[in-house]
Image (cartoon, rainbow, N blue to C red; front, side):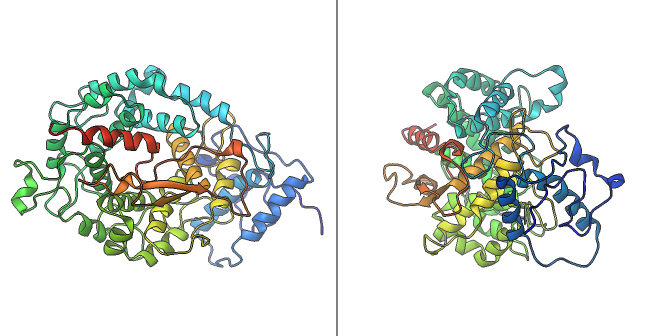
Amino acid sequence: MDVPLRSSAGVPSSRLEEILDGSDRIEELSDTDNEYEDMGTATPEEQANIEYLDSVRIPIRDSLKTETLKVQDETHEIILPYLEGNPNDFTLNAYGIPKLQRERHAHFLKKVIGDYPPQAAMMDASRPWIVYWGLQSMTALGIDIHPYQKLVAHTFSLAQHPTGGYGGGYGQLPHLACTYATILSLAMVAGTATYESVDRKTMWHFLGRMKQADGGFTMCEGGEEDIRGAFCAMVIVSLLNLPLDLSQDAPARKAGLTTFTDGLGDWVSQCQSWDGGISAAPGNEAHGAYAFCGLGCLSILGPPKETLPKYLNLPLLTHWLSSRQCSPEGGYNGRTNKLVDGCYSHWVGGCWSLVEAATSIPPSTQLWNRTALSRYILAACQEKKGGLKDKPGKHSDAYHTCYNLAGLSAAQYKYVYDESVNKDIGSANLGAPYHWKTACGYEGENVIWDSEDTVRGIHPVFIIPYRSVYECRRYFETKEDF
């Protein structure tokens, strides 16, 4: 057997049939300075990686030449050197895979939570998301976020709108996405003063105004109705233990609806597309992030084994989710015929725990390739300057750091729904999501991470630490009224 040569981001690989020539390079995929040059004969670790990639490569190739296929080939040519070798010169673990660069990411995240220059003003409306992404990434890495407690509480006290909910910042109108990110952030830093900073009564009224006659939710008053609204609303109502009854001034009452959950499961069901995925709204194209929102919403409405089969075609959804894992990259894409992207490590990878909880498969059966996803995250998504990213050639950011780490957590642990867990909470409104636990770490024969590469466990529905979820709900269960 000939010793293989490493691929190069600048030289076409013989293992790909159709590659764009250098003049047609896609600029979007090469906006960083970490281009990888061919270094000649492969090391033993690289040879093992190349053999693995060859073993998972799809053997059938469509003979029809399309623009989509050309872009896919170009993307492979940029990504493969990182899966075969170690262009960043990271320290390798015992399996020949780059270690999780904890110190680099910690340094990056401290800057994420810090002050921003005037040029970042365009991101002001995303302030709650930046805080959430930063804090959740820190907790996944085991970094203490308690020092940020007062700062986070103060920041969001200014973003709380007098009519309920949270905007992106001071004086901005309330929006469900901003409110969702805010509540998760406040739950993470915790504390009585933090919890009490939330005006639950005006929040209840705000969510009531978002409830629609067909069962779904809009993201803001007069805004779009989509499955993000359904998921965000259920997360907020559940964590804050808000009354399920709609306020008397809620517009949906005119259509005969009386609670936040009326018609919601059926509305989510209508979002399942013909190919099995879940879309933003009935009739739209299926998308990975919307799949997680739909599954998350139903997993709050009740135990997954009851709500998921009731409202979704699970075999068809399982097929669609499986089709999102790219080969040979190992990561996920968000839609059919799209490119792999590190953020879907969570948006699609995070769906599996919820789906598995709704099925009766044996513990030894694997619905997805955990190690392939972990390989993609560790080898291709870590930025040398810190943080994680979409793919090689992109820049790291808080968003991709958060969801790559969440996906890595989903791959490294087995999350299980167990109604015997936390019997003291969740007995009332939307209590189903408080009965999850981490059964164990994944210990398959093909594990490719060391203990130093392992992140913290994350609640599979709320995507914050378990403790933050349970302490927040316990606190608000002690509140007899607003």
